Length: 455
Ligand code: SAH
Image 1 (cartoon, rainbow, N blue to C red):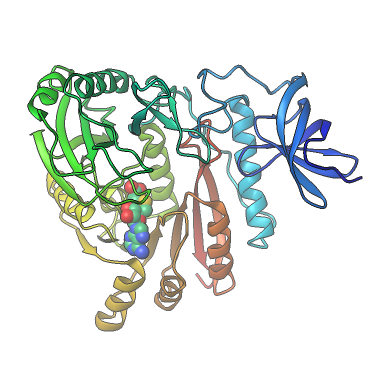
Image 2 (image 1 turned 90 degrees about the horizontal axis):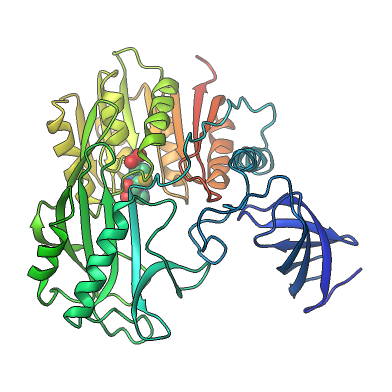
């Protein structure tokens, strides 16, 4: 049967899509319904209809799923940050496992996947050490901050995100009150006018250090000394900076950083290693789970103190320094210069000398070092952004023939694509483990250990 826009359907939700939406069928017609949970029976209104499928808006949950829970955050449904807070945490983990498995089977062509049990969180709230809050004006003209609604740039006002650190609230209250007192305008995307775009907050869970970076459409903040005076009262405040971003794009951070008070970085610890983190550098957002993730990567690397290792997409050298504790020598490659500065400082800070860092694209640095200097690797670790590894890089890895490759991934679709390529060319899947770094969202980290077939 065919359906049209505005038709009302009753559906049994039987599956969960890759963005966390519920999937059900009405007379053979598949409907994707945001906010519906596997096991629900719902009434939905068709908003968009294609030949065999459509998108529905949830009107009513007729019979709630046994997996349905009351979200902790009152804005969970509108906010674009979380997608599956209404699903029990146990089911979230099952969903993530089946999503990764599905990608590996369909895109990668794998079967008999050697998957270990997913490593979930004990307390899946208030785990994030970083948040970037957009600043704007509400309908009533007040300055507001919160998160973008799903797929839009309208701000859902919320200073108490259930995933964020408790200190966020205090920081946001103080920045907004300073803006109101000194008539500092929020930035307006439509016109490109106004000053304050985002407030970035980082919190070191281990050290208690707090970083605030105000991102502005300009290069100064009027009466910034008043803001500093107020923020300094917050226990743990360590770094207050201004980031200049005059672009009309969606990119949150610009390249220029101005120190307003304290240091340009905070320090945090993962395992035995301390890391200094600047606002521009990538740092894993969930420190508790990151430790487990890195421990898995280290386990899969299977180091005995004699190995030469490359850590590609190394960020501030987090994995590199972890590996260096058990390898002979580690070389890290990362595209962001500020992150490499952090990486070098972090090596020094921890007295780790068997590491070297390169700034540049992994797909340029590794081929160059291999062609020019014939560099060698026993183990190669990659941890690329969502788009996965560049083909040139994968080709170089194949030429270098490391015994093991450890692939850390935040996107299972590109992971499956890249693994297929490696496994068609001499490697085999040894072990896979999922680590839930992003509870209540559809995202998950995967660590894969690959072994060269002839070893
Ligand atoms: N391994 C690090 C960072 C992983 S995130 C950690 O666990 O903390 C991915 C990193 O890849 C980011 O730091 C990003 O800046 C970097 N990056 C993106 N494209 C790159 C490329 N082509 N070459 C090298 N690094 C890249």
